Length: 396
Image 1 (cartoon, rainbow, N blue to C red):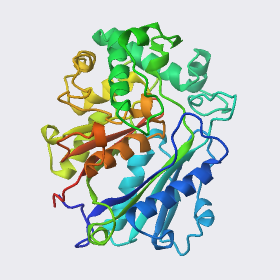
Image 2: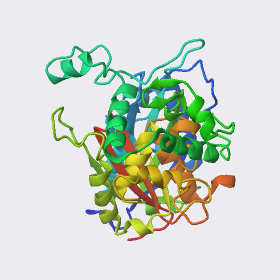
Image 3: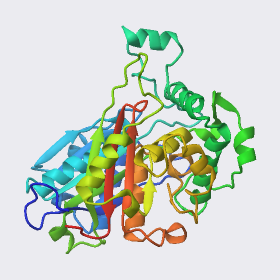
Image 4: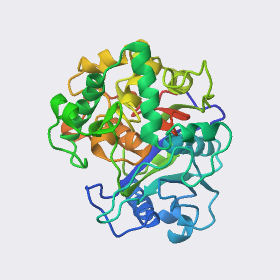
């Protein structure tokens, strides 16, 4: 299905992908330096000069050290589109949506979308950021939230996961099944940071971070950057890589109230953004071959799979424990290892793997049937959600 308002021949596609080094310890560069490297890599991957790119969208991670000044760093001139996008982990999907609309409407020929972060320093750890913003004064309901001890992403998601467990009987062993599956995929991915085998017993024995989450329920923290180039199908014909068509998108921002009756922890934004993206793409869930799910925590994978409809609500734990999402399963999910075992680049983690799978360039982890790839992004504490539908084929 064509994007509404598309100028003939300007169906949006992803034509370039740039990924910086994602090894366990990458130091010595700022987020902007990583991002500049990623844009250059994506341009080279597409067969473009950076000077040929007409738009730039940036998304800053935990360190918040990336912005529009990246265009100056890259010596980009006379841009038709330049902005900073921030929906946290849903930002990658949003960037692709905005870039695709601009390309389809003929506003700009090509747009680089980039995420970069550098929170890690030698001999220093890094957290996942304060819930609601580090250093921000808490007022109103936020004050109640802070006083209750919910001050970080792990504690916020732990509350959501606990509610899901209470309502549906989801177990920590089922969370562990997600971690094990992610590691099985990561062992096939040379870019993954964590490639040692992981068993359910290892998961259960790992230290508790915040109940009910063990160490391996929590995503990695990574330095680096990822960029993609969005352009038109016509322009991509003369470029280096096979185009990945952007068939559909959707985003939603639930804004769960801190009051009785909220669906926080029970229903995620995937329940709205997923059907919207699939409707736009002209597909149904049964057409999806590969799912790349935002997995900041193992629980996020479970609730997202439920809300996209891969299994019934409340049955996500049993679904992942069945082996359906791992190598050889009926619902291959997070085929690069996701953020739990591969690398943590916010929404660019699932997006980058989706591009690799759609191109058929996954090597040992390549899924044989990859005609339709679903990509999710999730930001805040289930506060933001984006969905993309990608394909190696033009469905217009």
